Image (tube, rainbow over all chains, first blue to last red):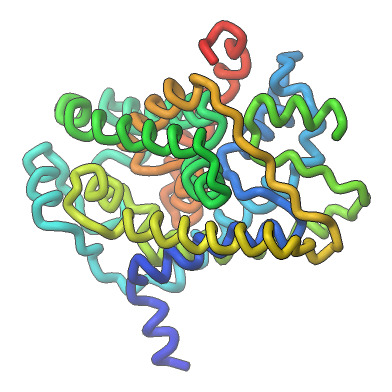
Length: 190
Length: 161
């Protein structure tokens, strides 16, 4: 049992993560005929809390509440893993990425995220505002305009051989490359 | 299909399957169980790490491509089996997966989400998990994403689709 727990505490390789994430697709279909998609939860939150008579949010969100239950589960899962299943070792990232990020001013490599950007203290700085607030806005606005995110398009859509999802996935990646190579050097200098 | 769900399809919200059977709220807890497992996997395979996403976009590591590629393979095989064998859900319903219809939003919105993905190092799923692991400030990112979704809904008809 102790060795099993020790094993759990090590970072899991990509294929273990990939298999489990992939299995979410049939799990949701079999459990209740649900298509995997997470960004929809943001729409349901709007529909539940701030519909403001906008037609896009005027639907019976309670019928989609399974999605919110799923999301609540992911938060609990994050809590369990973050508090009981971490080894305490630093995350190992590619040397070249680390070098470039250091040259762009990132200092903290001890957590899953750089706390010099993602923290309450930095929220009130220009840089923190851009990464925490503006970044989130783009995620919400962009995924809804695209009709899905990495789960709905890249995983669920591609699994179902939907070409619009392939277009969306390619655009996600192109946007990410452009921002990383051309946008971040400026944004990290703020 | 009811009018309600047709509208949901056209506007691209992934879930459109309405069960005919009324179920008590706690029947939804099974989705929370899947979510818990999913959240643990996201932390342990470091999918929620801002650094891993940076590696991916800098083409310095295979890790995230491996995760997404494997997930798509497993999903693809499962969906094909379910469709070809006409597997029913545990509740005995026929499994229906809505086709995605193309519109220009997948390009414009896709690019904008890509920008946000590189900045926050997260898609919507990882945002929730990051919050769970103890990065409490990410609640602000999530609320901002809700706001982004709301603003899209407000100006939807003025945007190209």
